[in-house]
Image 1 (tube, one colour):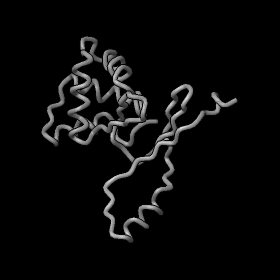
Image 2 (tube, rainbow, N blue to C red):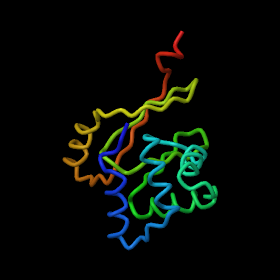
Image 3 (cartoon, helix red, strand yellow):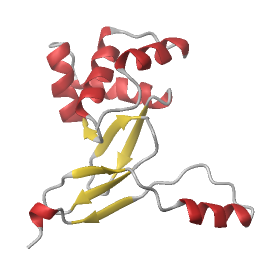
Image 4 (cartoon, one colour):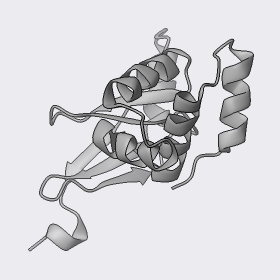
Length: 141
């Protein structure tokens, strides 16, 4: 799934936030955009190396942290000890297969009625996240 912002748009946003867009940062942003939803550092590093062959894994980690601090990247923790990263974009959730590890974006959000109930009780919501765990069609049976 592609993000709602293009690579060029993200670079421009980074520039406006006083974040210099270095070749390394550009490679990581481009890798994230091409890979799509929730990727681990190994996948991001491998893709970034296709754009910038000498980029190191430590540089990718540092860049992801910096982009996350700038609000351009989100980190996901799905309980398997691996952190996954994706470009900050429109609101979505994830379905995670417990057998093969496939992760798929889920565009629908059924939490909005619960948020309305919480707000009616004076609760100020800043965010929510939902991950559904189960078995994909290929792993069932």
